[in-house]
Image 1: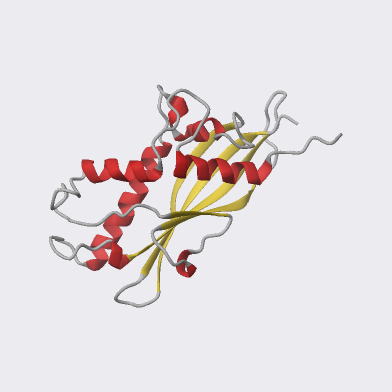
Image 2: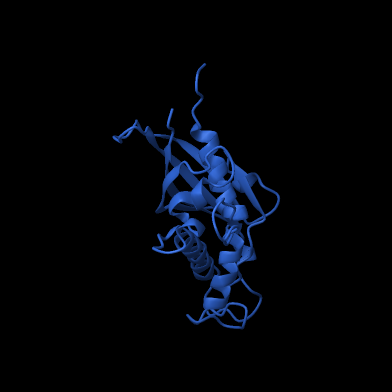
Length: 207
C-alpha cells in the first residue's frame, strides 16, 4: 500500500498551531503563542505604561485571525491578521535513511495604520509610528523563532516538535528568513499595512 507523504498540509498546520496555540507534544506545552509574545513586548517596551522606552507610544494589538493557505490581507474584515501561505518546497536533501524537504512559507501580517496610532502621546507621526509598530511585530517573530539551547521544545526551531497534527515530531528546522516586503493599500491617510515575512520549514518524511 502506498505510504502518503505529510507534505504541505502538515507543514502549514504546524506553523498555525505554533503561532496561534503554542501547542506541542513536549514538556511545557503549550508554549507562548504569538499574542502572548506581543504581550511580553508591550511590557519590555513599556507600551502599556505611557510613552515607550524608545520615546514613542504606539498600539500593538493582538492578532485576531491566522489564515491558512491564503492571506486575506486587504480583503479581511477584522485586523490584525496573519496569513500563512505555502509557496512550495525544494528537492530532496541529502540525509541518511531520511527524506528531508524544506518548504517555503510566507507570513503575511496585515494591520490598519489607524489601529497602531494612539490618540495621544506618540512622539512620531503616523508613518513613523506605523513602521515602528511593524518592526515590533517582526520582533515577535524573531523572538519566537530564535534557537534556544534549553527548553528547545517550547521554541520555534522545530515548531514545537511539529505540533500535534500530521507533522508531529517530523519538523527538524524552522528558520525565520526575515522581512521580504512592506506595502500599503487603500486610502493614503489611513492605509492598510501589509508586511510579508519568509519562513523555511524542513520536514522529515520517512517514507
